[in-house]
View (cartoon, rainbow, N blue to C red):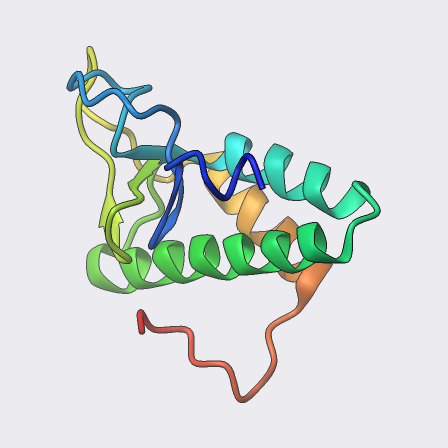
Amino acid sequence: KSLRNSGLIHAAGIATSLTNSGQQWDYPNGWAPLQHIIIEALLKSGSETAKMMAEDIAVRWIRTNYVTYKNTGEMHEKYNVEKCGGYGVGGEYVPQTGFGWSNGVVLALLEEFGWPADRKPDCE
């Protein structure tokens, strides 16, 4: 309930913070390792409600990675969680592409949850 009511869950995943400072670790950016850690924690909580939330967040994250990849031809180090298909911005350097943890987290989530043939990968 705390996570659901926190304001951190958005259309394309979990924001790193609620502070919109323009820095890389702040809103509206979401990072793959954070998504993965929270999803895994929800899965291991023993709560059916938490497990459903974990899958919902995973689907949001996989979709935004897929749509962004289709639009740019690259995986990104961070994503804009406000809208599906947007990559992250801000920070002290130009955001990186081809990022290993983004690739790895998407693969881990697909292994954990699969992707039913009738589920569309595009943003809804």
